[in-house]
Length: 371
Image (cartoon, rainbow, N blue to C red; front, top):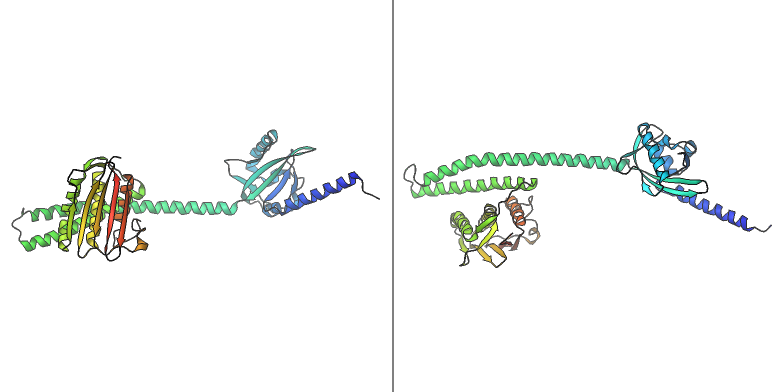
């Protein structure tokens, strides 16, 4: 007997329905359909796996069977709101949602809702994802971050405490040495002056290290403070030159200061810029056994450049991008260079280096003359 149009239509509907069921059944997420009264009309295999029920145990049951008791009242309100204004949306936006398994265990879930128009009215298709593993990972990450923050605070506190505790006695030692060198306690012969001078240089170096430790802890904590004011750079660099000259002469290094004839000024934090140049010159002296070290000041209308060049051991190409990182060590200077970069960044400038291993390095500090 030939098929009628209605038979063909029924067959097509059956095929489409079967196809849709296969799609729902093979979906990686849990899918269930709930009617307006809140009863479960359809579930897929993933829902069975997620909640521990068979589909026979769920079909026709209230959706509340999958909701912890303390959330059922809110869930009923959410369902009524959805059917009052049906649209595709996430359920419980801004809230943590929980599902209730057959064994009584609660699991964190994400739920997406989609309304479906049928001849009997609107029903809702809910896509449910068990996010237990994600929540566990988030919690582990949170704890790890909290522990890192705690350790960072301990490190910053320790660095600050140690540097402060060092600075006071170092200052007293330095003043005492200077008094002796000045003859306050009686005549000092040349041999004694040499020994006292070496001791004073060692104290100065240790004081700079303490400042670097304190500066780096402030840098990491975001507490480094700046005082911007008009600064005469010729005078500032002359002071640095005077401070570092003895250390260079001790190693028989030709140490020169090259300044323009006209006075150069810039709005900057005087002490911080001085700290940067001292760090660069100190490193240059440390890594230069013979030859020349120069400090050069250049300027144009809008910016200034301070260059420290040495004829020292140089830096390997693979290390050039790392030397301004706090954890990188170039003979112990890593902290100082990391602080230098941060200081110059705060001045809206740049610090860079060019180097040839075995021939020397040139550090360039460039920043606007007016911030």
